[in-house]
Image (cartoon, rainbow, N blue to C red; front, side):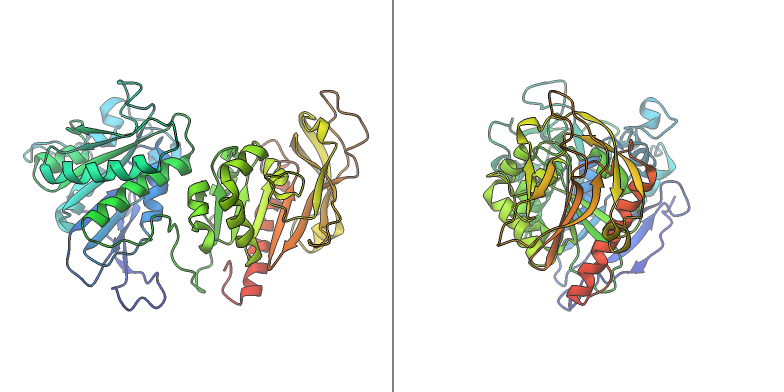
Length: 497
């Protein structure tokens, strides 16, 4: 069966006269598996590389990495990217297609090695037809294991599984060298494996001599999604370099700023000290937002340049600050100073204050009663101020918001930082674990400051939490839209830029 394509030329890069416009097609149009396919062209002939993410729905880093790679540029050959190959499983966050068990539900077991045999599903047939039509020289499938192969032989995590061909083995050796050089000190190294599993797309392409192939496996255990996605990007980037395709920087996560783009580009910090699940769930429900997860290495390497908003979630402020390092913290300060918006929630609010040697110091707020920072968790009343209601799109009234050891803030009275505005005030309190009563009520729950041309917002409680009032969660999404529009008006560009 031939795949049903809806082909549209999509110009993503302003002033890109040096390369043909990328194309976007839809694979499986009209089915529950319909998903975009990105084709990046160049003027010079060269190899064609197909990158696939999201074959298994419980392996998000591959889809995250491929979504970024879909915006890369090359100077030779063609790059084809399918970021979300298995939409139903990704939406359900399950390995298998919902409602199907065993190999029947495992999309990566639907590809026979014998060309005389039929594909095991219609979507597998569509994927194979795309390969036959586009004729890639390389097929790279991005996956994740549950543990490190080096430590646990039952898992394939942190490996490159290549076909048993000299060119593929030589290329994978270079990719291993690159990703191992970038791994965290003390983290187990990536290993070389051969012979992809029977039934997989890569095994079928290799056995049928359609293309050279590899399965790239990161490890979910103890590693953030942003870390794993960057490992995928490093390996793909090294392959493209090896093939002479001259790719752009590996930490380019978005297309260049385009005044016609109405999406808000949101960077979600996902590194040491970050608990980003609640924000990830909230942001995923808003079609106005284009969200990418960033870890310290990408931030240090300038990845924030094309974003409108950086969100630093709850977790541990000290681990966040130290994990970012001096270079990462300075990159965030530069991002805000040049017009970006910083939103720090709980731990991210500690990070944005002036109180610690690992703080960003971008809001004129200090943390008081630091001895009792572990005040406990619970639901507390927060009242929006007139400024929060009228100017910052936060709605009005008093809301029940989840609190979990967030900072109790007060003016720091620093001459080098502008005074903050109070958007929300605590009207109740949490005072457990020996914390004194009477400290929290009347203190700021939400403050907004300016740093250079940008804004920095500190949220002491968790507006993003499912345990907070639904209206407060909706208010937070509207506030992000408001921040993007303010940024746009200062920069004189389109919405969200």
